[in-house]
Structures are given as C-alpha cells and as structure tokens.
Amino acid sequence: MNLSSRRFLVRDRTSLSHARVEAIVGSFSTIADYHRYLRGTYVFRSAYEDAMASFDWPSDLPPLDHAPQLLPLLRQDLGDLGLQPPPIDESSLQVSDRETLLGTLYVTEGSSLGARILYRRAQELGLTGEFGARHLFAQSESLTRWRQLVKLLDEAPELDLDKLVAASETVFAAVGGAFERLQDA
Image (cartoon, rainbow, N blue to C red; front, side):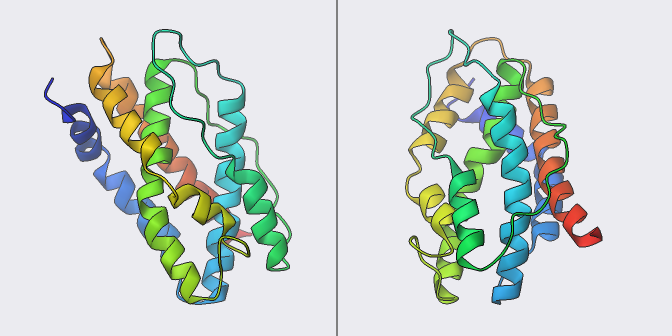
C-alpha cells in the first residue's frame, strides 16, 4: 500500500460517523458548553482507558510513545470547575486484537488533532493547562503518537481493514453515546 493509504481508507469509510460525533459533541463557546464537553469526554475516556488497561500490546507491532493518561487530568479539570465526575456506564468498548487496537487508536489519537483547536477555545474561556483544560493541553501537546499510528497503520502486515474500520465505528459510536446519555440524564 502507498504511504498513508490505509489511514485515508479508514478516514473515508468512517467519515459519516466522524461527522455525526462532531455534531453530537458540538462546539463550546460558553463555559456551560465546556462543562457539557468535559463531562461527555470524561464518560468516554473512562470506557476507553478501562478497555486499554486490560489489553496487552501485540509483540509484532512496534509500540507507540507513552500516552498521557487523560482521566486523572479530566478529574482535576472537573474539580477546578466545581463539577462532579458523571456516572459511568458499563463499557461496551473492547480491544481484543491488532485490528480493534488500531481502529480504536485511529479515533482516540486522531482526536489529538482536534484537541489543539479545542484547547485554543478553552483558553478563550479563561481555562489553561493548569486550570480546567489540563486534559486538552496534554492531549494537544504532541502529535508524535498520531504520526506513529499513521506509520503503524500503513506498515502493519495483513490487517483486516473491515475489522479495523468496524472498531473505529464502534469507538465513534461510544463517543457519541457518552454525550447522548448525558443529554438524556
């Protein structure tokens, strides 16, 4: 495959789910909007970090640089703003093999690109990497893991692309579901 062709195939095949999540998550221009964003992100990251904690990295894949643990930072951000962490539902996210791992990471590491924009918006609300927006600062600080993932996607041999895309779709649905459940509560 050509350099980055798997990434673009995954992007194209998940574009509707990605757009749906962006619409559900929305943007924030007020502190109330940011509170909603922070709570939804906390619910999703709880499920994601739980799924990743119980997965052993495949020995045939080169590891990515260490990921920042965003959940503790999200708890601090919530506390800064006087918010309690929302209740967590039992997660349907499971990482069980190379394809689900790469499909999951495609969504979560790709979000670091958007985190850069979101961090600037948070700063406009008076939030910083030391108050209220620690998780965004940490997530947007480096694109190294995203670049490593793109390389891994394209260099990993014999991937079931349909399974990888399905995993990405599952993660997009989990993100959307986290925000929708908060709206319904």
